Length: 581
Image 1 (spheres, helix red, strand yellow):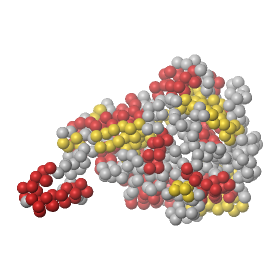
Image 2 (cartoon, helix red, strand yellow; image 1 turned 120 degrees about the vertical axis):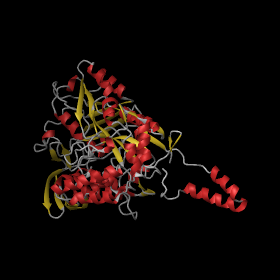
Image 3 (tube, one colour; image 1 turned 30 degrees about the vertical axis):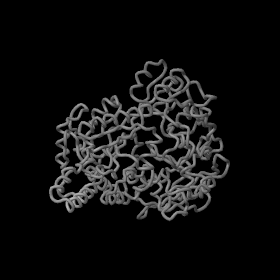
Image 4 (cartoon, one colour; image 1 turned 180 degrees about the vertical axis):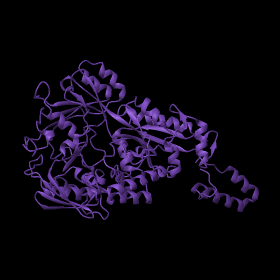
């Protein structure tokens, strides 16, 4: 980017120094020659990272389309497909990327934006601000919404979305429908593809047409290294959807129909200037190793997620997962064996419930893992946790190489055969557990369904598999609208991407309508409104469209001249069609 008033770059300082030395030795003619031979600006170069097509064909398609559009706009662009675990390490742990494309789990409540964007998390690992985004105005608005009454909170959030259109740390492409498939045994009882633990509990609590089954529910999943790392507090853990959440229970589950107390029997609220909550645990709860689960475990979990070194390092070593939810709790104290008191940083109950959604950890297992083993690393963050000890309605039975993971019902769970438990588990279990069968790709999963080796799919299928599933006798396609979204993220520490105007221009170089219709085969909603561009699918706060969706081209193809005019309007220069730094 050329700007008369811009600060001198390091390259120009070095070039200028060399010129001065040469001039002092050889005179004006050689000084002019030296200036003429000095290298000019380089072409803007960006690498786009996403998982390969076998892991997520949609992310790969979006990344490929983005590369083509960047190149048309004069950018030297490369698409680098890498395995999901490696992508998570690069993006969420190491900050080693320029641009990435990924499927995000979705914004479950407005406050989730605080963890995603607040500068306090910019140096932490995980989905806590992986963009290294730092903006005082955004920070103030993210903090203000925590303690603002509902009617005024809407105003604060609207201001936040307005501000984000100017700063654009990431942008949403579209909200995909979750696609799955089910065999004949469950075709009448399963209405949507399972993804969350509650989805599986509902399936295992609904009597099949043939009655209770004396076998596990067979679930087909696909991807690489799915059976490794059973660590629930790291981002490069096991990637089978819902597996770890089935092993580790929260205090409360949040569903579309409201919150369901789980490990908690009851939550009492005290609404002062900030909320406080007294949580009563269900009686006689056990860990999978037989030890008692009590209030001290809950208090320990929140301390540990805040600092896995438990005070052994000066600045602490927070866990990469659940940081946003954990940070909602100012303090968590065990009153007695069944009672925990929460002092919260918000006045909004819907926001506060997020603090109750973190998986509770057994103190006797994780406290010994607080040993510091490296810079900002503890044993807890490098441990594979091959024998997980949770408190879920399922416990780990076996892992067979890279091909199968089997869970069995945990009969000592407080809700197993409970008369007063949530309705979702009234007739649990109708199967003798769950067996996840691992395949290399989506096509192989559909093969397993065709051969009746699985009951249903557990990893979202790409849209191009729906036709094949529909042609199989007795098999059905399952679709469900979700809050998940495909995201394009920018590393704000990159020399060019640190400029918010440049990020705004890049965000316009993808035709969202075309992507939803063609790349996602119509099984998606394009992001058009202001709030949807940052991952909030349904919102009455900001329903107007924004300039960021104005694509410089048509039918997915960038118009080179139109794109060039956009960059030139921001004082970027071109040379032989190349966009210069």
